[in-house]
Amino acid sequence: MRVILFTGKGGVGKTSVAAATALRSAELGYKTIVLSTDAAHSLSDSFDTPLGNEPRLIIPHLWGQETELSQTLETQWGTIQRYLSALFAWRGMDEMVAEEIAILPGMEELTNLLCIVHYQDEGQYDVIVVDCAPTGETLRLLSFPEMLHWWMTKMFPIGRRVAGVVSPLARAVMNIPLPDNEVFNSIEELYSELDRIRALLTDAEKTSVRLVVNPEKMVIKEAQRTFTYFNLYGYSTDLVICNRLIPKGVGGRYFQAWKDSQRKYHQLIEECFAPLPVSDIPLMEQEVVGISRLRVMAEALYGEGDPTAVFFRGQVQDIQKENKHYVLTLALPFTSKEKISLLRSRDELTIQVASFRRNVILPRILRGLVVSEAKLEEGKLKIRFLQERSGDGK
Image (cartoon, rainbow, N blue to C red; front, side, top):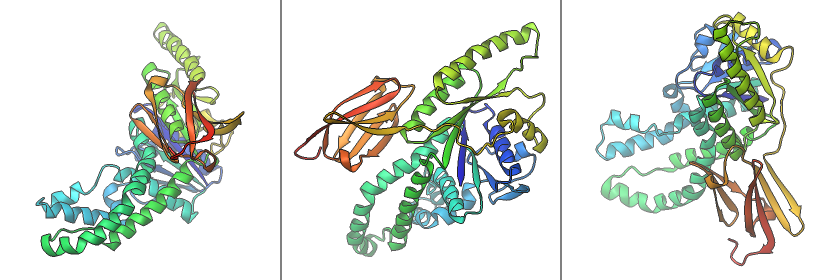
């Protein structure tokens, strides 16, 4: 199964590109579903057909879905949400307000990720195309498994033990609705699914992220930052798509200035994202709405090619032995050493770039070794480990 995620700055045309990709995939015979994770859904507009929370057949081999948090929450998070709602109500909050507050930040991102994994388990589709929210929301979506996995690893074992001791007293004396085994069992199940989500999304042979850009300075800068964070979390980007290029045949003094600007920024895109391939889509003559116009866009983007192919393969993490040292290399393009900080604790390495953090569990061969230095060279963070082991494992 292939999972292809499309993201980019708001307004660059990523929904149209995602829809066109899904259409071409289906017309090649792959059973394809295109899934929107953007709160402001526009897949329905792109296909010019109504879509909802359940997959709907658009054409043979192609289904579309626009997920709704209110409808998916019960199946994905129901037990945990009911407990949180009861806890807030016990604190004196209005019951209706408590139910709303119990929908915590990140739940929507999580339910969308769980949808992807469930479709993988069912095996009903060959290709899942994800029309992601604009880049900021997409980063939260893709960093959520890492964040929640860390929280549950550190806090959950303690939580169950403490609840087991405190719960009888709290219920008898204070009537506090502490979590019961059903809640903890739901969390354990969620924990196991998080591992599967991470495994699927970081498998470069199955999952690819594709960046949609326009040849404009602000769009390119945001795409560069996004690409850095994708590498930080171990997600593979296999293609950059430059949308809305003014065709060469369009003339006139007014358009010449735009064409000159686009030519300059297109060259910048190729330089910044090398060795990633860059594919172009011209500015269309008409609004890209409906099957026929999406088909034109797909042909402009992929030609006769297969959109489900992996367009670029490259390692974002590598371990090599150099003399008496081991070197862990992580790809972190478009950042500077001043923005990077490292924290080592036993078998865990925390890497932070600006406000985004990743916790890397070190492989067995590096555990207990001492970090001697870290250098950022040509977009790669190289962390050197001494072969001499420390006394306390830090």
